[in-house]
Image (cartoon, rainbow, N blue to C red; front, side, top):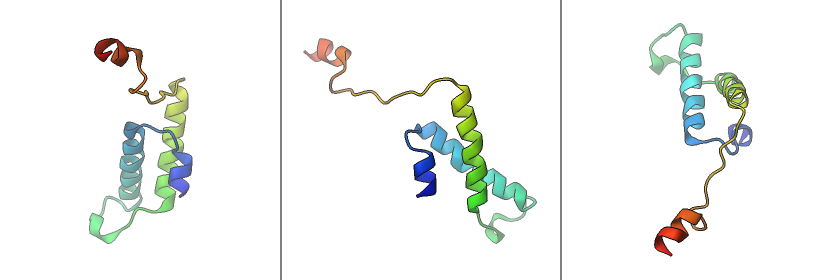
Length: 79
């Protein structure tokens, strides 16, 4: 629930970045040991979310999903 709340409206690419960053953070935290001996913790996701939030804010824009049902190009093409 914490991840969902903090990542509401994020694109798939941002969500992928969060998961990959959390994994790499956990790997580093465990000195790159065999991944079967450790777990990704909330702190790994918290750090990853903070980084992605900064990246997202630095881009200066939020891309809203398109509503393809009412998009002008669809109506003009099929219309």
